[in-house]
Length: 146
Image (cartoon, rainbow, N blue to C red; front, side, top):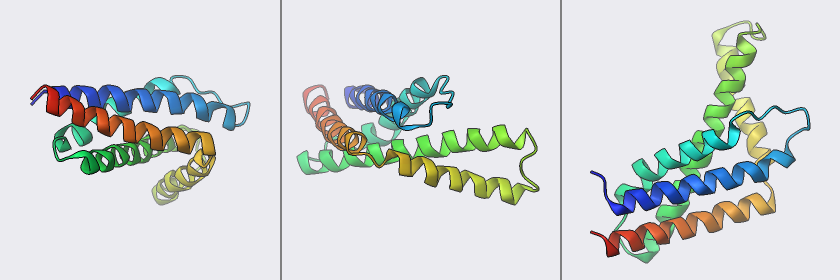
């Protein structure tokens, strides 16, 4: 059911996903074609905020902080999985893999590589602070507009 907490959670986590995307871009090799990377991460953030964070609002401040951190964790995991799957599918269409199992393992290999790129103090600070602020904003919206 739509409510203000879900709306605030989706907007806040969508913004966090969008901002972190622009912080990750300089960390990747120069030849990387990003296309709609930031927009895809923003849309993932909107869905994560609506489905994961919005329904867990209204349990107190400590739970709100945990809710925000959990939302950011889900955002990162889904983002890594979607972008790694896209990379694998792109290479699979160019016949890089000998079988389906090798292609599925490549998803996790890409997730690990992209996850290592994300271990940057600025990116981590943005994710942590964005998660905390998103959780608190979601809790505030739930308490204000029930």
